[in-house]
Length: 411
Image (cartoon, rainbow, N blue to C red; front, side, top):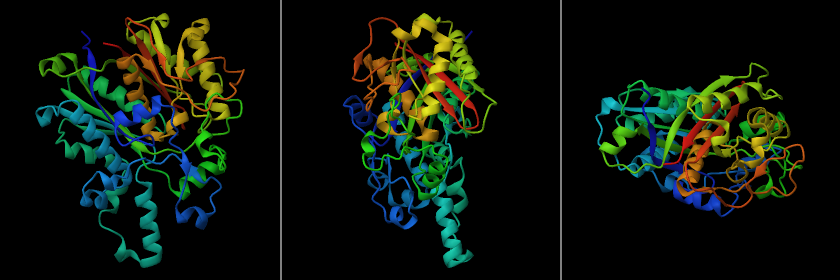
């Protein structure tokens, strides 16, 4: 018999705030986390895109000095978000052998890798730090958090581009259903605001080029959208069985109903324009939860603000819901946070959980003129969700054709 799996803690550090609470508050307030980059390397490298959605609170203002020195920024973000989520869950007293971590990243320790390369070229091999490999490993953030929490039931890291941390949440759900842990901390982190990734994404024409007005650059579904905004940060969720949560008297935010992971096998960067695999992931997620399409009350869309991606996701949604889609409020929160890549699914899971817990769908900013080819009910100011049982899904899609969808229910 399937177990009920619930969310009991959340944490985040993001372009909107240094905690989950601040991030959510500023999201509801319609703030943008995007700003002009004020780093010498912007002019030095002549990168064509001069803005991004940087973490609002510096890791150095939160962590110990030795942690900042010995961890890549992606791992620093993981510690900040993970510790907040764990504390928010009541700092559970659980045997280490029953605590697990399911983490994710899209790129990994890019700052460490490229800094080490500069050191090698400019100062020689003897100057390369011995901590370089542990700092640059994609599994570094999850490992750092797992060691911090003494998690001994397993630490897994998913690298599935922008679907990564939603996939990590599916893994956490499956791990708990299998009885392999009593409690899992799941999420993702990314710290890729570096001139090389910016130049590379720009070379693909994936990034917005609104250098003169960065706060409005991320504009999902707008007729003038021209690409995504690179973001950074992390989000974490504490996931456990309802039985375990109630036994320890934990507050429950929402029920996690599981999800589906599949793939397009279409193109390394472009989504399937018909959205067929993405549609199957949504349908499977809803059906596996024993629910019907008409039960869906809210959608947190992947919606990166790219001309091609937003259309492909709409096509997938239309395949799934048909005429029912007209009555479902859709939030596209990357308009505020930018795109956290491997951390995107996790922070959007936090937003979805908060939307259900507070019965409030968050707004999609910068939607000045909605693309007529995407006739969704887009939430543009905070919207009260109806009373009663609420079901929400959160979509994540990534380069490589990765698709991941999860569902939550109100409690």
